[in-house]
Image (cartoon, rainbow, N blue to C red; front, side):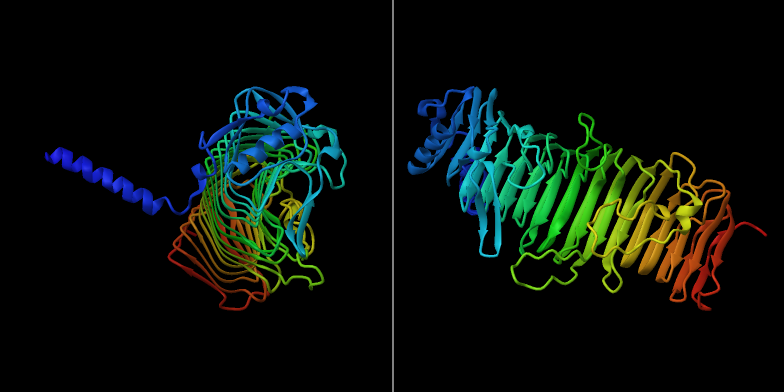
Length: 544
């Protein structure tokens, strides 16, 4: 045997071994009946007309049932418009919508039976166009369209149908399809394992609660290459149970919302653990008028724990944001929604170990970003690295001195505190906070601080570059802080006051290695600050 033939043989054997080793876990994508796997069941052969007028629910369901009975395969919708009520997927079935095909939701609520997901106290009842529960190896793929005709369901109470609702399913693939105009949430995946959503386009702007994509108490989830544009929250992680969302990756998506573009919460019974979000673009909606929220959208990134649960191990990077109200919002609250019947209100949850890096935001409002816990319940270990945010300005002296309410039980929203005392970041009840290379820009005059810390411990500000307008308050204000190190900053020339230190609880505040030569007054210390709480070391200041 020649050396070339030997290498080819070895390579072939390696591929066979790799397939046997790596093909066992996870099984997901192709095993779901993807791309022609198994027999094809054309819904036309079961009586579906495809004219958009005759209800095809029975024909499509018969095709799905036959496919499942035969051991699995692909149920195929050729070009045409297929009017339907609820269809129930089954294990080992792929629903393939060809280019030019439309699965059109009926406008009659009676065509959507109420179904529950979960069991016992962990129960959710809803209607949907495509439904599945307790299934495995399923897929919805193709270049066709799912249209829920949600404008027929413009009432505010429950019972409005979603387009997709899958509960307790595993090895799920959603790929390629366009989804539009749901009666409520576009798609809801609840308690699913090994879920892949890729290359889909969502436009949901016809009625109330028009979320784009909801991941609820799921594990091992990949979302990438998607375009989601919605009236209500766009890409949302929730835990409407005591089971957390775990091991979720979101990447390479373009996202718009009149509410929150990327959000964890509001429902947070189990919390959110091991979440990675990267390489996404967030835009203020361009093609719709708002029903909820604001025309420009609320938060770009919103992280919320208000119903118990644990938010931990979240990494967000390489995000561009344009035109939203607030680019970054983090909240630990105590709304305390219950997810188990006859149980006491859940305790305040935990919010820790979050890294946000390489964020570029422009054309944001004058509200400011906030990172807020509660007294005795601190947000812990948050790092903001390489953050460049642009705001419209307009903050007043009245905004500077306004007392920000705690609002422990309020619904969490990036605008919940009103215009903040800081145009950049207002941080309260936080421990282990790092701001590294944060750049804050203003399009217009603003009298507020760039940064405000209240009840913050073990904090680090390195390389802050903040816009300044004449007559503005100090760049940084610290109140009742402990263990704060500020270094590597070079305030703008003409800055009147760099640091204002307040509070009888303040201690161990260090200003070190900063270029303060352009500052008129380095620090103002209130009389209530304990003696020896402030230290300066190796700062460059202007000659007196």
